[in-house]
Image (tube, rainbow, N blue to C red; front, side, top):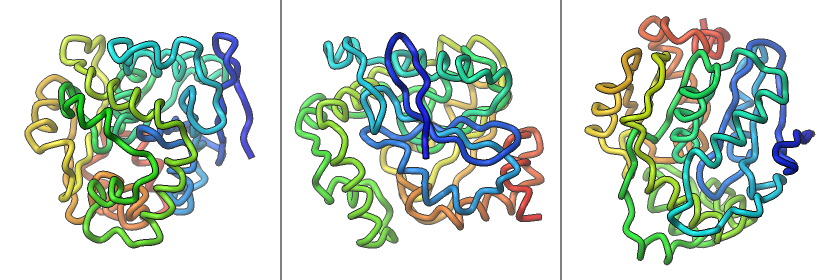
Length: 268
């Protein structure tokens, strides 16, 4: 069961699970909070997971200026809503986790808010021009082949159907606007403070190359990058249990990220 927080006269939907140090979780482009539901099964309740539907996604209202033009599609647009939602919820310190577009947004939120740690999965500090305009305009939110293309070869049929269903429940126009926001994102000159940052990439990731991850850590001082074998862009949905377990195996290497330490406490 979720609740709403009002930002700029817009109702933003969120779900709050657990009791402890808060981690704000931001979903990928075209999805909503349901993307993370499988992951929550394997995460300790010693933390508070706050999953937010971006404006225009899931149960959140759309901003009247949303879809106003591809040039206005910005990660900061979503970041402003997340930052204000966090303030309105009374959170003064928190970690922020995001996947794909959500990872880009997590970086923007972490740098401009009071986040203690940033966890970016399948994203980078600069995702500008990943797509060409034709691909974005021809994108679909109801074609399973789109999910199959970016998911790893181990993704099963049931998962592909479920992710396609979640995405198809959201607006195709919003998905395309999200992709333009991803394609306009370059934060290399906007790093406003040093913050613990973890960037995770999977073996079959197609959108974010190894070089993009390496380049990101050149700009972020307190940065650690990791690559795991198997699975693709939607790793948190493709293999939630083993992803959390693999993070647990390298816990010692991640001591500087306090949020991860708490997240994985149950595995030690």
